[in-house]
Image (cartoon, rainbow, N blue to C red; front, side, top):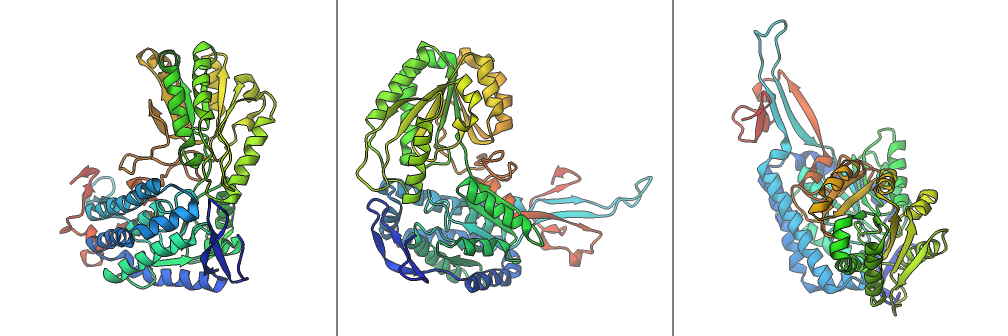
Length: 510
């Protein structure tokens, strides 16, 4: 990041590499301390607000984001290079997930109320009155993502779920889109003011310094971390969090090649159609999706070669798109070159070159299952529009390769009815390696919904029990507290007998 002075920096236009005004101040270590102290100061007040008041705050953030209008989209387009149509949809997703979490907050099921009434006459020992609820962890550090400047950044899913849980946030904006971040954060502050939130419920840090991010994670007021980005970045934050006197959880989404298995009958029936559909998913957003289909596995034969030919032909007509930053474009180019020169690799096709400084052509490679077995580094993620087809000798080799894969965000099966018996043997394998299993659909669409999981075993994420998308994301920022034999007047409101909060009594819904 080119800095105008030691204290300021600018964004760069993704398509041209030219700096964009204005200058932005880089946060200091003193700013980190002030922001974290402000979040801590807001915590006890914010966490005890009535559910409806907290929900209204989330809805107000969405309203204020929409009120910015097209200025927000235009700035995000300059800073990220993402098309206006994509950003319009992303803004809708951002606002939609804020409103969805508002609904979750109002329903109050997140409180997890459980009551086991006292059994004074139970033999051989009486049972005391036990009541449980979930409470927020504390202030949360959120790191904005480069590839989703709205939906995974300042007011994105991590922020929405943390605020829904009752946790103030300290947001470290991504240095590639400070203008977008600042506009969204100002909208959040307006929403906080209009809904009467405590000072310090939302806080914002800027700049490219890793020192600032490290200080944020290690600040004693921070109780958890949300991160979407590279494996190196996520693991660095996790190490810092574990080195603290009081370690904290880091919920990092990091890397995934998202394997797609093409079953024999599906290939025989739809090889050409599947090849074209695959390329459409591969190049979406210049391949800069967490769920980009970076790995195809199938039994070698004429049907797979038909798929490869159709995919190669479709890829050749794809013009290189603007990538998010020069660093991401450089990393993609290096990764693609590494694959093209690797043993046992065949380059099937390369897309058209692009005009921008951050453009590089899409690429499609192929290798035998044996070559991949001998060189597992071929399965490492190349973040961008690059994918590898693995030509497996038979289903046994395909199953073995799936078992050897690292943890993934997604795994996909393309199948017909005749493939069902064989596919059933793969599902248990995919369950162990993936957070989301799809049938007959490319993985690049992630629905924000109650049943969605956008997570998976390491290194897809640092905690396979969690998701960063969907309403279960709130669980990351809550912890259980049990209250034994407390008199009614000391119990939290939702645990009292006259509360209408959803609850389990003796293990059954009441």
